[in-house]
Amino acid sequence: MSGGYDDRGNRDASIANPQGMGEAQPVHEGGHAHAAPGGPFLIGEAMTGGYGRGADILHACTIAVERGEIAVIVGPNGAGKSTAMKAVFGMLNLREGAVRLDGEDITELSPQARVRRGMGFVPQTHNIFTSMSVEENLEMGAFIRRDDFRDTMAQVYDLFPILKEKRRQAAGELSGGQRQQVAVGRALMTRPKVLMLDEPTAGVSPIVMDELFDRIIEVARTGLPVLMVEQNARQALEIADKGYVLVQGRNAHTGTGRELLADDEVRRSFLGG
Image (tube, rainbow, N blue to C red; front, side, top):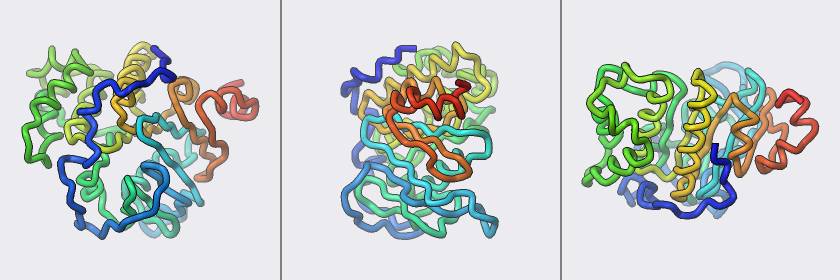
């Protein structure tokens, strides 16, 4: 793994899009976006809520990421990590708190509207069309675009060369790590403002995990913020600019990746000593 997050530059900003999907106009589907004061580029602030009418899973939980940062959410099983990610993406009901993206309050927007505002979300499972070819999967990622997306596809192939090699192959025939590359590539085809990854290395080998993390670093070098939930906490914190340790849906520890790796309590409780 490169681990070179200190020297991140603006490698190729064209794969990211400050306007989000070429749509500079506000989107009002599924709610209303409102102007919001300055702050982090993306923040889910003081989020309290759960699924449907069930009990609250998140309790005043705050997650944020800035441009060009990798922010990771770690913690024990059942800590609410994926729930926090889904809350930011609009997939559960918030009783309290707000979500803001690039200066807009998007708390009321549907997930579909958030995609159009610039969120690229890669769920942990069921994140590719297995019967379609790799290239068809990437084309599906561009379905909301009205411009020529061939340059973006070339950039995805540059980032994931194995996908170009296997572009005619059914995505369901690929290895687990290659499928994850397809899923990330498809999200990048929307030219998002922020990339959100839910357990991107679940079920892959350590070698493939290192490769995926290297590619995630490359994405962040373009200036694109990356928010990631990850079970491999130590490895994720090694590449993280910012880390959030959640316990029972609450913020337990927050700091830079290095600070959390050096914290005795974090190491003892969540990193195996």
